[in-house]
Length: 238
Image (cartoon, rainbow, N blue to C red):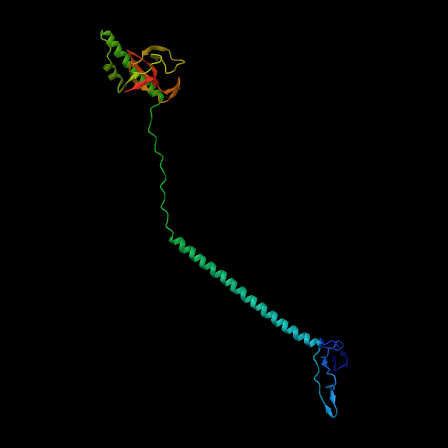
């Protein structure tokens, strides 16, 4: 049991510390003991108990001091964090400069130069050259015939230039068609060259094509004093 020394109010709640009426500090009452306020012939001065307001003021001061300490600690940690971030940024910047300085400078790659293509004769020039050679061949043949001599192959070969000799290989038909133009559609058949005959190849087209299941080129040849086109898929070159 507790009692307020100012107003004399008693309380049975042992957890209370202050009087609910005037805020005085409660005193513990021991059964059988004399109240400590006054004794016979003796004046005892009881100190004035602290009021609830003063206690709350002290507690608020303590709370403010604790809060101030917490805020100061947080401020210190924040400053330290900023300093650490700045230091890390400086270290990274210096390291990147050192790394870039150690990197070898790549040598300048020379730009590839496009080779100038060699000048190739146009189809017109080839046709004119072929016509000139055929004209020379015709004159040679006329001279040989006019003199009563039979044209000889070595003489024709010298006129035509570096020609090659090939053998007709057409055992199924037994002959190879000699045509006026390099085509089976518009080229007329001048003669039939027997299987196994030798022809002198003057020149051949660059383009290849397939004829009767065989792939080859059209070639200008001379055979038996006649000049025409044959398909070299049925020729065996030496």
